[in-house]
View 1 (spheres, one colour):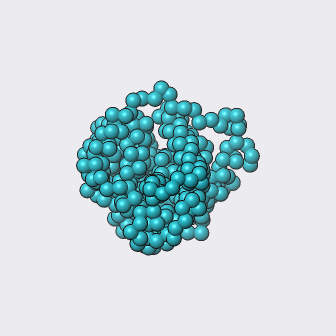
View 2 (tube, rainbow, N blue to C red; view 1 turned 180 degrees about the vertical axis):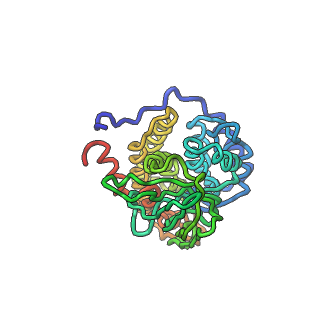
View 3 (cartoon, rainbow, N blue to C red; view 1 turned 90 degrees about the vertical axis):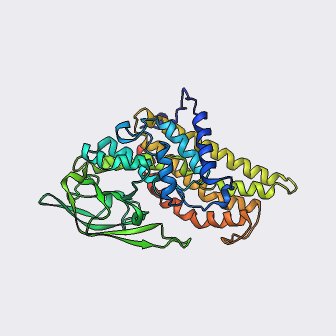
Length: 386
């Protein structure tokens, strides 16, 4: 792809999604009440709340794009985007079902066997089947092609040995989509990789919790010791793992969760300064942040439009993720200059509490979905600079 071909086409014609948006807001008021967003617990995709996920599934808002025979609505990518954006903006507790809804379900629907689809898609659409992602490994950083977890053929299936790390919600998930080596690496580092659908109850699969800087253990190291994976749990074709996982990452990297994490902090700042004497500096900073937010949303919607057209916007998704990471990590520092305050997690002040939460979680923005360095390498190769 040349630099001239790098575009983010507008979503046109834009469907009228306002009725759906208002319907989701009414549902959220019923489920969550009118509590301000900054009073709700702050996590990347929301708290783990099985009851909320099941209620959302009952409304048809989980696995929306899945076929009707599996409980989906065969909704458009843009309809799903609208619901997801409203849930994120309200800090709704989506942690249980979000990964399955965002990427695992669509991937299995696209490349899975009929048996695999029947096994998990109805539960995903109901908001009762949870997934984690088995990509990153110890000592590999975000170099996904360097994975060393290995699946070795045995009678009737595969023995898996190795480990994955930074695996969000693995201890509460029913399944993992696992990327591992099924043949030794050769000249092409991307060859010899395959994906498996792994039942997390499988003997030989062990979750070891990791506590983050915020004192939470949302992610884990998952260790595989001769874990037996049946042949019929191979996802797609053997050796096609790299292409499958990069298409999956386009779903993970391009959504509104890449730039809405700091929304609560911005709202808390606006409320904090509402009764203060207006000055130019806060107005300029907030205006700048909102302009960045609007631009990122426009780019993210464009990627959703490309996915709707069955295109493969890997490059555009990487750009959205990179710019979103920078935006989320700069938010706390820029707003702190506007309204100086000491961040404090236990504070009764909405702004200082939101500031502390955002600062504690800012480093993780880099890890989720690929580091800035890896993303910029993808971008450079795609436009012929490497």
